[in-house]
Length: 335
Image (tube, rainbow, N blue to C red; front, side):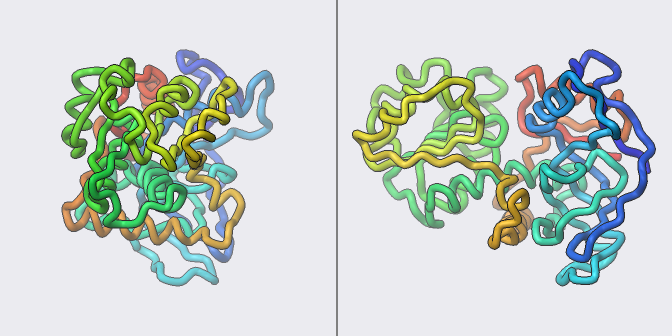
């Protein structure tokens, strides 16, 4: 089968940074589905792995990345239930396994769900990773319950990416006032389109939220952990919760959370499949709920820009856009 991958970690301007390969079609295990991939979306994790997985070395075989896909089930493992050949599915996958930049992929059925019936391939492929990340942050890490949030505020730092779907989930399933951050006119409008009650500039958060000091119950930081650390400790309410998804490259002062008894949460969507946790199938359940919300028009896909073709040139173009920091919503490739 055809796949897009790399054997060296190179700058995206280098034509060898992503290449086309002919590799063996995968053979799936008893708990897996063989999916004919129809569309994928690109996330920051994609270029971060590309930049780091083969630094100062050359891999013996190409590394195939990609963790957001929608496609058709072509084969089911002997232990698989609730799926049939021909089912249209979507999923985010497992970072320890070969990714979806390929014609076919084997994927654990416990982390797959049938795609939203009302959404096309590209719209569906835009959702899994960010929806799982947001849902796990809100309901599994911070232990918010559906319906919570009356007279409370939640701040989403980085409303244009993962925040796009977090805004929608919170507005649909909770009663929080949702404040999102953005700095450019186009990202401000995007956050409003997603349903944010207010949009503030993350470059001057304390200034714009001076009346919210010590009063924001929950903060979801999808952008810069260390860069916003001090600001978060000032805005968060006593006994509040902060969740982050981005590695910090410098030390942060955990002691700053003690006086207010703040709970801090890390969220990595890949934890459940990576460690084969006993609740791994929770990701199937979450994707089922997301599909139901999409099919009932309660949330919309965060697909923004469309690209076409399983070609290295197309994938390099999308990686370059992701790395620019100017991407809004999801960049999706259909092939």
